[in-house]
Image (tube, rainbow, N blue to C red; front, side, top):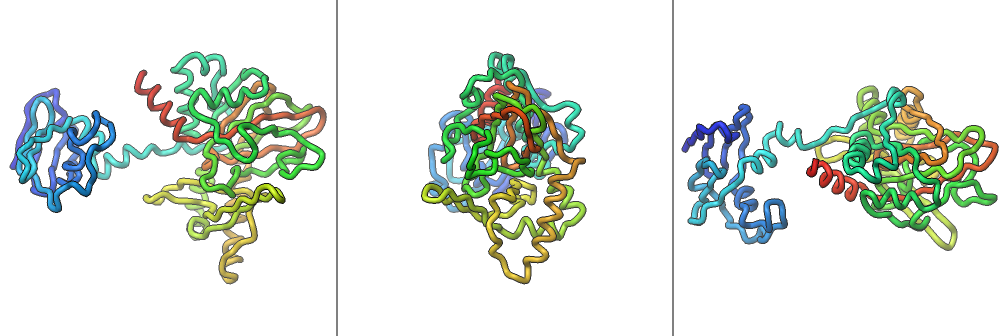
Length: 378
């Protein structure tokens, strides 16, 4: 059956019920098909509120679900399922927001904003006083983290522990064996090379954990007299360049898991196996792992080792390519945050005076939740 709604307010040009599918033609010409079983599972009365939790289990749905009739009304799209006299009224805007056609699904997959060294001209950042007091400023700063995987925060009070207060603006500290927060400062006999004055290559933190801390924050309390610049690189941009220039190497690094390990004798022995480049279900890069200090001896077939190292080294060169990296000197009161699944960070060696950073970990789900709430209020 066909049903056209001639109301300018409605986003629907036409409906057609195909038994096991509902076809909707939207006002902009897009065509979406909704399976009947999907509609039955998502009927509004089966949820606690518009976007609330489901009140039924999928096991309670009929074995075969078909649509008996569908019509557009001023209140939405009314559907009657075969064998069920109760009509279900779907909000048209809700259906459009959850449409299953390829174009609509692609729109819901926010593409990361890949960057290179040119980003140094305008680092994504914010001012602590504004971010802590103004929801709009906080939303802008959190939006930078979502989009670029990296942001700077200036004029943060140089009070020990303030890094945790910054986390509290959007979420919760992820506590590890390093504690709620940790001091990055050189010590006489360090177990971790981060606690020395030597330079550190670009890396992601804690690849030996599952799950890995998704966000890392570093707050500068004291800066060395010479050197110690922080370095960041977009691992997604480097992975994309590898995919374009050496697709076989990209495929190899995405396919082969490698072991990571961190040991503090008698106290900690953390291990995890995962590929250096992890893909999502649609082939996009989901996670980059790279930490030369924590990678353990490879456990792959001997015949594959040479090709793996060639790909590994090619990727490593991209991750340290000056054209892709940004170096910046942190002054006391500066803080930066990275998406630890995407952006690698490192530092150059330093001398003279004391360089003291305090760090903390957090997770992206709370940041994104806070950002959605703030954007919804705007």
